[in-house]
Length: 256
Image (cartoon, rainbow, N blue to C red; front, top):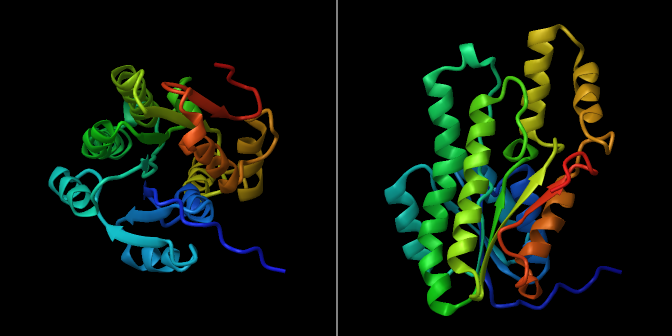
């Protein structure tokens, strides 16, 4: 028997990078919990596909989160946002001396500036209503350095720093700002990491994937649904006492 869909909560949730991987899992989870969800991304075709996953509760918007004018226009068009999940991300790997300015700026733009622009656009309305949840999808790289990820690690540290600053501004209100910090997840981004390892080391695809799995105490890659579950917890109305926190999803390697 198919379970009846959850009743609509009336909340409007916005998920950036919402067409694939973690973002899509978050869209599906929040819609399943009864929220109206807007999946934001740059690939119109992928967004059309994700719209069908939410039982009529999911819509889509094409937007580049690094474009200030586009972000401001999007949020003005959407109206009051109750849940914001900045998830759009970019990654590349190289030793620091081979990291180009273009690679650095691209990852900072998506992983840090994009988060800032979306949070800034949504926060004023949340504060005016004294209600809102901001859950940034960061990474374990936001809390500890790893070789060959200078730009990615710096950008994710910046995102978590922003979360903490916003949390201090909204402390004592009905708004919260938190982050989830997963280890490697079964996703297209991880597939690209595997391909880079294969190219750089000559390992097989399976050997490269096993190396990533061994980097976590879990001994495996996370499922996108596990990250979505953590996001849903922090986005819940009952999580109002949790603010300015980083929820690490790696099986216990980082304990914060």
